[in-house]
Length: 508
Ligand code: ADP
Image 1: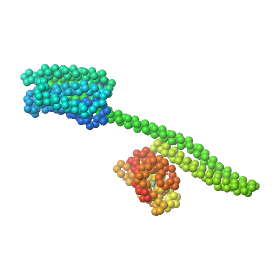
Image 2: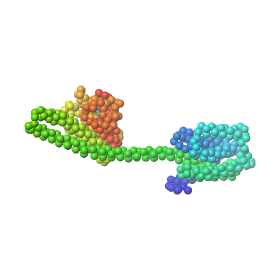
Image 3: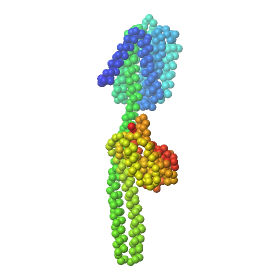
Image 4: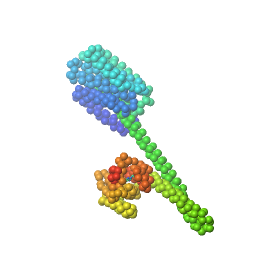
């Protein structure tokens, strides 16, 4: 049986209170009770139908699609049954026969649909064929009840229920028992909770049917009990179909998204580890090449002095000097500048892969003070290139001091590097507070970035246009990574030749 967890317990208590309340209403005003109970099941059945019609892509289960479609038509019959009920006076036909006929038609449709649903446990369904089948069946049944009058009588005033009605209830009960057996046989197909609700629903229907066989008067106690069990049965169907078949795919989808996210994060960490180890290990041979090239430079200088002091033939001396001063010197220069580039790249890669390992130390930062220090660091370049750095009053922000310093340092460095060679250069740093964030801008009137390239510049190793400027294409990817780690945002507004304005937003 269902384990009585806190939730189930709560549900049972609420259910009992509702049943007692509804039972009380039945005593006071039976018609109101009947309409309420029937409408509840009709609304549930229609809801299942509407959901299955509209969002069946989320329900990857033909069994439930079939049941959902069938319940739409069952709801239709139940609605007619409610409208035809004694006392409603909607149809001109008097007495309880019409409502009872519609009732029994609806119950046959329900139990036969439950039985047929097992055909679609592993088979694909054609929604249109099912709809057409139910539509035709409904029309035929309605005609036989309303028009042709060939549907067997179910209630005769003065006599009560007909044999057909009573036998039908037993037949329906028998078929429902088969449904339970089939559910049990196919139990591995269902989710455990869903399986239990389906069984409960069928059991409630069986109990309802048994009460209806005892039915003496339209307003009698067995009729009330029967309707209450019908209410329960639809409630369980609702729990089984709506909760399990709709929530489950979304939960599964959510779980697989989370799984993919975790896997991605794991792969990312793995990749960062590889980048870190490779750049770390490559640095020592590079440092060696750099060091030995310097030594080679010294050795060549010594060699040159030796050549000068030696008494070798003049022709050979000139040849040797040319080799040492021009060729070897030039080659060494290339080796040294290339190793410097490689070294810078490796240092940058190390820096980037360290960002995630580095524990953020969040604190209130006085950005005015930080920029004042950076101005001092860049004073030489600013003066050399005659760049005017204007800093407005800036709000404080919350972040890791070292990393936020790297952000501003990179942005200022770029603004200097890509400043205009023609116009008078200017860099303006501004900042303001918004409701939930602090925004800073670093704007220059330099070479600018074409809108199409603006996403590219944040990608590692991506450099644009003027490749003469020193750089590895690492700065902005580092900046972006830092801002991401701070749950902030970075973007640029720029036009080619019209300067660039970099925005950084940090949560308050
Ligand atoms: P780097 O400057 O080392 O090339 P970055 O990642 O800092 O690498 O920048 C990537 C590219 O973005 C640069 O190569 C440059 O083309 C462009 N860029 C960055 N900042 C600016 C700027 N202020 N003005 C114009 N272009 C810029």
